[in-house]
Length: 137
Ligand SMILES: [Zn+2]
Ligand SMILES: [Zn+2]
Image (cartoon, rainbow, N blue to C red; front, side, top):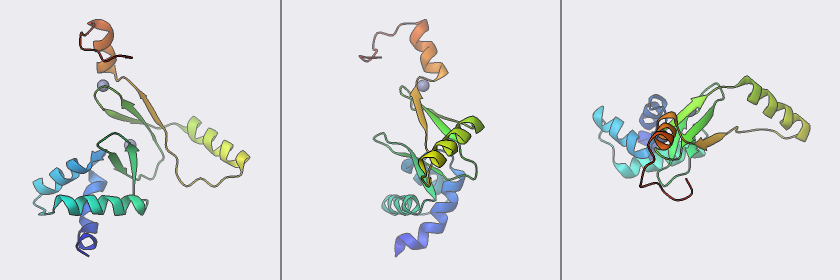
């Protein structure tokens, strides 16, 4: 019940939050003077996720979400610093739709996450070889 009461608030903050972790949302709401408990935000986020209003774009220990936008877009996630970048591509959209038609499937969600190293992390890697590099990187 409590969660339902807060749901519209959490939703409107989620809309403004860009790519967010639950922790970011709690912070954002508290900064804006919304006295909401951590547990309520967690429950509300799960409800929004279930309702398809937000999508999960990273499955790390701390999940990253974003509000579903009108225009489909794709993500890149840096494996080193966790930065998330987004991009749009008509070519990818068309290709996915074409494949869906061929397979006769009805798409409900279109999610593409590329992973690698962002320009800062990849630069750091090649320029000065760090000692504390993790194995297999
Ligand atoms: Zn990075
Ligand atoms: Zn995005």
